[in-house]
Image (cartoon, rainbow over the protein chains, first blue to last red):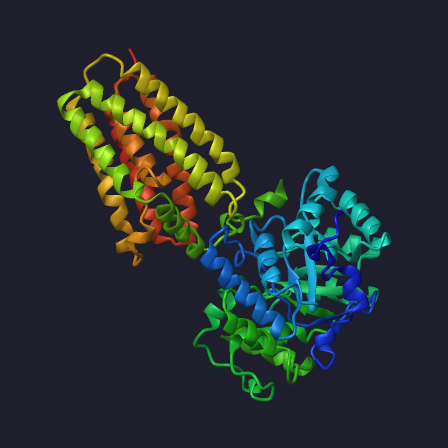
Length: 300
Length: 222
């Protein structure tokens, strides 16, 4: 690969050797248990929100979101080849920022053709404009056996920081559990929020036991949860938690599970990025508070 | 298989309503003044059809051939496909429909008298596609900048194509003119239903009206 400015930016190696210099004093940092790599608790998803094609106005709007995210501490930006033009949008935003060093570049491999995995990863790198990823995951466990081979190989060669598995909407939890037991994956990504807590039964305890980082996707159920809760009273303990909005409480609830490492809400608005980032600051619910939040939510 | 059955239609749409309507804003701006000229050309073909049915229909088929080709290469492949992977498969289908209309324009319509109700229904659909469809953006609290315009955007062009199918006679000619437009309007209805709900009304109504008109005015084979 020709060495250019684009290929010299953050990647897996950079993430491990340059441990988020801008975040040194950030109390919201979590760690990937298997490597100790630091990562801020609130990341940034890109499902739907960054799929804007070549629209210059919307590309700039997304770049502003990415800029606000980097300014607020950065961390995990997650995408997938499945998400339309989201990868290119992220690449556009990062290039405008001259590739900040506090981004934990996270993507997926998603193809039914096992042999196409490496090519797809190369295309994803090109779309982001980066050399290596901090984390690559097998998207929805598609062709997991072949893709895990590829990803572990890249990690061994120093071209990838971490290897992960993803699922969403509560699908394929049995298979995910088996793979968590049988393979030395660094992360799992699954749907976890106040309304979708199925992962609490087996997957989250298993992640704790095996030292696997957990990434929570769909923290707001694609906006449906805040919409449903709009106008509903916050529980009394929200004051204790220094929280004034449902979205922040929803994130605090997710991040309060001891197995959880990162939540990755997606948004198109700079104000929401800042609000989401702020959710990781201040008190986090303890076990009793978690029970009270669940009871309050279920009584609405 | 059970895994795929667990997906809902919304899971397959990976873009937002805002992004969808912006596609038309950009396309109209990029092709200006074609958004003004394309509907006028279709209306001119319709006017010619009133005087010389064969010549008018040939001109309409030729315009539709150009429209399907242009929409397939510009709107579908350049704008829609980057945000919706399924559209990369739709592009070639648009090119096939363009070829079909080009052949029909070259060969001319088959001989045979078309019943007056079919002609009236055909005119109604063509007028709805050229004059009515652009105004929907205003009814939906959008602006004319992102209006869907016949010859530029796929939905009104599909509606005009159904109208053209009604103006021709013969089972094969009608089928060739309407099959892809029907499929397109069906997918568009589903897409807009998931994206916005209310906006699905237009392609859905076009689909039903066109289907009924074609069914009622196509005589059974003897």
